[in-house]
Length: 159
Length: 159
DNA sequence: TCTAAACCTGAGTGATTTACTTGGTATTTA
DNA sequence: TAAATACCAAGTAAATCACTCAGGTTTAGA
Image (cartoon, rainbow over all chains, first blue to last red; front, top):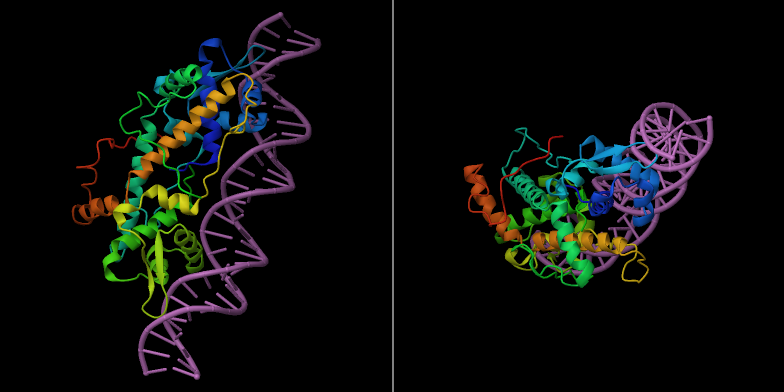
């Protein structure tokens, strides 16, 4: 699992799309202005999102992009995986060149952790975020009040 | 939240440390050989880990590194945050230059998601991973059987 | 005290990635 | 046809990554 700024841009743009999904296609120019992302960079991101069947483009005036599926059928993991390749980490990979066991163990542990992160992000859909967002939009601070059980208070690390 | 190979190296190295924590200090040379990471790169990573009070170094012959706290008191988020700076994403930040509300909304949504990921990683300790790992070491595939409630079956995206 | 083992510092570097630019082509609507 | 939009390809400056090099300093054992 990779979680870079590229993935953030994609998630942010997709959120923008999900918020306006019932208002016809959304142009990249709109998202570009809205999110402060350059148009061409968005084009690259959306090329990847389109390749993974997450969005569909409509050409011509009045065109733009809309979600290829319902926002409840698109997970955050889907989006991040579309734009950020999933690179395998293990050096020993699937091969048998782990001599002492420990090397393989730490790699196995990392892979499992990576899978857990992936699963976690797979269970968060765009629709869920948007649904919570509609609360924010009005309340401006009530986020997390009826949040999923696994969500707790943030405890950012002291820099 | 950033999750790059740098963070992976750090987590992997810390896992190595946790696994041998009761066997005295672990040298970087050992980890370097074990994990296939260059010694100097490890030194850089461990400088950051030491600065964040996650490890302590013992100098001189027979020295090395050991965990500064119990492995149950060190979370994956701690490790990743130590080596990968946490960069704020929002362009509008805390300022009031969000005109239309939507811009701010998507940013708020991203921030909340980011917090959720952070919280998720905060709840996974080194000790937990190692504990599960000792199962793997023997069973080689029983991971996740008595996993925390939020962990489900992996469903990797079709590439 | 000498010396080797270990940590510590800082500078530099090729490769890769990011975020973006330029300059188009294709398609659709008015 | 003209304009708006998606689509496509190539290039690029800056940043980051993963690493190397060249020195330290600190400690322990001879």
